[in-house]
Length: 210
Image 1: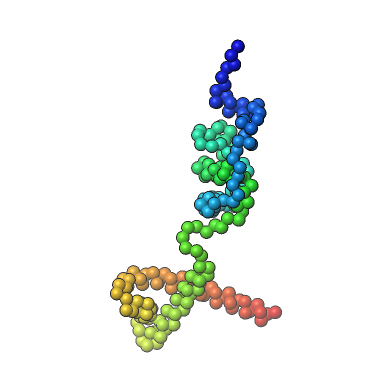
Image 2: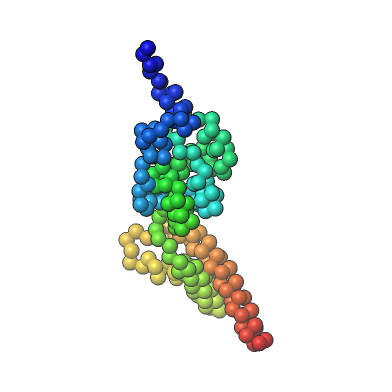
């Protein structure tokens, strides 16, 4: 009697049930070996997930994410995705990383991957100091114009700054548009400067009270 040929779908069912033995059918042996360390592009993708959901959520999802490859997801995979806090597309992306690098590597990297987004590297507190210095400079210039009898001391101070920055340039920016930007930066810088001076005063008072 000829043995009936087993279909691919039946092989998958038997393999999931653990009824097939040997390297050919063992899911643990057929999975590719995890690569050591995530690539730069995959780290960026993992950082995106961490920024979106948080380190704890991604680290918790990595051990639970279904590892089915491309194709229609199984009902078990769909139920597992519902338990996770990630969206379905993001769950699939996390599963791709886990299949490529292993659960432990993805979980560990999720806890330490830098979270800065695309663009220039961080300048730290330098932009804050710059707008504080700008606000202080304009205030001093405006006070000089005020003492000289100017009716628009801030406008005159901004004209001084504009001339200082763009004197001699062939194509300087439009003055009115530039003023709007400078006004926002000046107001923000003045606010930050006032808060800094208040904190400094409180710190000095605590030192005197000791």
